[in-house]
Each structure stands twice: as C-alpha cells, then as structure tokens.
Image (cartoon, rainbow, N blue to C red; front, side, top):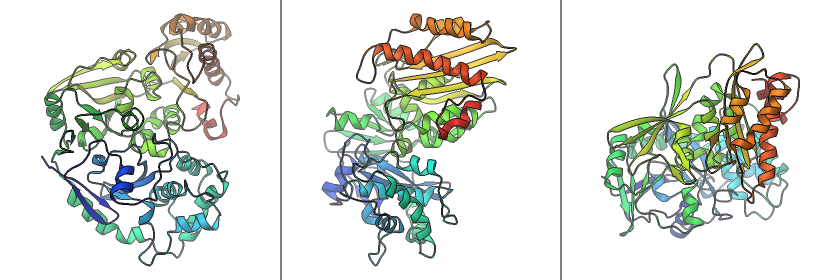
Length: 497
C-alpha cells in the first residue's frame, strides 16, 4: 500500500501522508494552501462558487473537468492535477483569455461567484471539442450546459454567456499557457500513475483508494461496513450537511475495471465507476431520452464525478437514472470477494434505504440491453427548475407497438414510491390492446393501483399522481402525432427519435 495521496496543484507536486478522510478540497485549498479564490456558497454542490478544474490522463491526453470543491474529498485528488483560479494567470501576471473576456463583457458584479464561473468557462475552453478556437461561436445549448452548475445573483447571466463567446475571439493570436505546459503535465501525471492502494488517514479514521478490482474486493471483505464513495456528490453532503463521521472510507475512482464501458454486441456494460459525463454519449446513442435525462442531472460539476453505479447503489427513490434503466431491462452485476451474481435492476431496490446488497458486496457493473427493433423509449423528468434540480416525478416508458397494438410495455417511475418501481398494473392495461385513447385512459386509471405517492416539499401526492398520468398522455401524443410540439426547443428533436 502507498501511504501518501499524490497530486499536482498547478505544476507543483503535493504528497500528503496525514489526511483527514473527509476533508473537502475546498477546505484544503482555503485552510492549508491559503488559496481563497474558490468560495463556499452552499456546501452541497449546487451553486458553483467553489468550482475548480481537475485534470486527469485519458488516452494519453490531459482532460480537464469542472468539479465542486465543496463536496470532493482530498483523497479523491490522487493522480490528478488540481487547478484553481489562481493558476490561470501567465508568468507575467496577465489574465487568462477567459478572465479577460469576463472583464470585457462586464460579467462580474459582486464577484463572489466569479471564480467559479471562470473555472467552468476554462474547462469549456480547454476541453470541449467544439471549442477548437477556430470558430468564434459556441452553441447556446453548450454554453448553457457548461454554466448550469453556476448560480449568480447579480448579472442575469447574459454578460457571462457573452464572455463564453468572447473568450474564443480573444484566443486568436494569444499563446495558450496550458497547451505549452501540456507535455510536462502529462509526464508528471504519468509518474503518479501506479497500481498501489492508497491508504491514508488522520490517526483515527482511514481513507483507502484501491487501483484494481481485486484490491477493492479484498478491502471490503476486511472492512465490510466501510462507506464506498465514487464521486461524493451525495456522500459529500453527508459530511457537509449532516456532519456524519465516516470510517473507513473507500474511494473507487481509481479502480480501472470500474471505469470501463464495453459493447458486447447485445448490450452496453457500464462499470460502476463510469461518470455521468462519460456514460451519457454511449447511452444517448442507444436511447436518446436517456442522454437528455443525464444532461439535466445536476450541473457539469456533478456529472463530471457522479457515477451511474453510485446513483443506483445509493438507492434514492428520486435518482434520475434507475427508472430509465429499469424500463429498458437493465441488470446489475454485484461482487463480493471473488463471487459475482447478476440480478434485474428492478429487484435491487427492496424498500426505502434498503437494497439487495450484502455486507462487503458492491455494484461492479450495469448491463444495459440494446433496444429491440421498433422499441419506443421515452423518459420525462418533472422538476421545479428545469436544469440542475431533483425530480418531483420521473417516468420512463419502453413500448413495443406493432400494427397499432401494444405488444410489450415496461414502465417505471421515480418519486412515486419508496423506491424506483415498475408500474405493473399500467403495463397490464396496455399490453395486447390498441394504442388509442380508450387504452390510454385505462392505463392512466391503473396508476392508482401501482402507486400511493406522498406529500413532501417537492410535490404533493395529488400533484405527483396527476403528473404521472399526464406523462402517459404525453407518451401517447409523442408516439402517435409526429407533428405535435411537446418539448422545449433544446430537446424537441428527441420527440421523434
């Protein structure tokens, strides 16, 4: 085992032997490094004031992503490069073109959120394939996606959007400091890559980060009550909001086998450590609405580190990915020690806070079958805020229709019960019947047999039931009337996918 967490901050190496397992990157930056540009606005990964950039090697290149420093633990930095707003100036102190664009477009007022916006734009500037600096325009949707995880009380956002376009204009003729440093950065990151299990702590509590699947399985057998953390987009809040003491903590973000996606021909196998950002293109290619669900899941900071496996293993009744995956018939592979077992995803969720997972057992991968010819898949999320909000109700629908008759149906909802769950009475009301208004009405009535939702601050029970019924109606409209406009401009094309 390696008793140090190793990472770059800017171009400087840090090797930490004594580490509080749940010290956040934001606290480390402000209290240890005295880098105070990154701010704490919410301590829950919602406002983006703490946004920093994390660079990791991917296929021999450095890939920068925006992340929330307020809920990321220091141990999760192992093997990465950490960049803050303080790193962007050049050797003469001149601002980065992103910062210059923010100034020219008057995109900062009180300034509290500004460093976070700068770092989100920096990752867009450095990493987005469309931002190749040969064009002076970025699509409005791409800019909105990059900035959705950053909140501002002052500007109204338009000047910041203008800065996103202006930074590409300014890039022409200006040297890219990070491009010049890239060979050195790659060499430094390659030197940090190993197969050792990281084992650090503060003298009382412990943090482990294995690099292989076997090492992870062995660690969990040794520490069956350990808290498994992938992206910490939820576990981080257990610390910052609930003040929970976690010991030991096992981070899976270094386990190479869990970071893989494999196309088997019949299915897509997604490792439990694959992030939303990495999984989205592959899932969207199979099921376009699945891609749209993930686009609206948190901001880019959340999607950069949050994982499909974590969303499932967490077992939340309002997780965004399980209903869609259940509707398409996804299966889980669980592992304990050297033993594996496979079960249908819908059978994994037993009750609120309870999953079919033994001590020391973990989710290894998710098997997503490819759509059968003619499958109609739709997924609809209802939330108070369109972007970066938790679902009130989420419905996912997979129908096989031939000759106007529903030959097969798998329908799942989130937010309607203590777990994500199939609507089996609704399915029974559909299968074998013509896909017409009478069948639709019968299916909408059957919802009451499947669900008795609760009132909470996100929605009342009556609202949830009405919304769930209306999602069925929307499904009927989209699959029978190709001219109907049921979507916002950004995702309207998906209605006819």
